[in-house]
Each structure stands twice: as C-alpha cells, then as structure tokens.
Length: 75
Image (cartoon, rainbow, N blue to C red):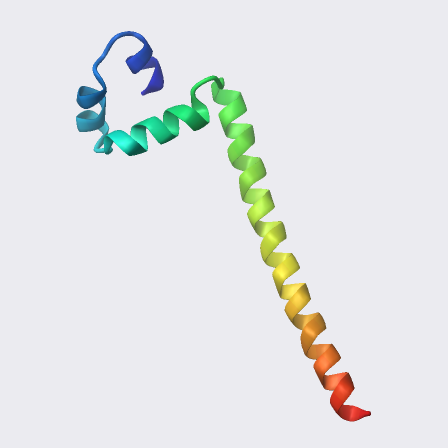
C-alpha cells in the first residue's frame, strides 16, 4: 500500500481501494513507511509481547494491592 503511493498512485485511490480514511493512511505511512516487511513483522511481535507484559504487570499489581489490603485488616 505504501509502495503503491511511492510509485505514484494517488492517496485517494489507495484509500478507496483499501477502505481507509486519509488520516489512517498517513498514520500507517508514518509508522511503517521506512520499514521492510520483516521490520514491520518484528515491530508487531514486540508490540504484542509488550501488551501481554503490561497486562501481566497490571494483574500482579492488583494482586499485590489486594494482599496488602488483606494483611492490613488482619493486624
């Protein structure tokens, strides 16, 4: 999609073809514009892993807070 734009296809035509708004196209172009396919795949993998780790951290923090609350009520 970005390569099509770089080869001279108009933005409006690309957006119509893929069902995107202009803003979405330019946001994707800014994020993935200078990357190869393998770089984009690696970025997506890292973003997925980061999301999972954030979720695990949030759960651990909630568990920790619940244990602290429980411990303070017992003593």
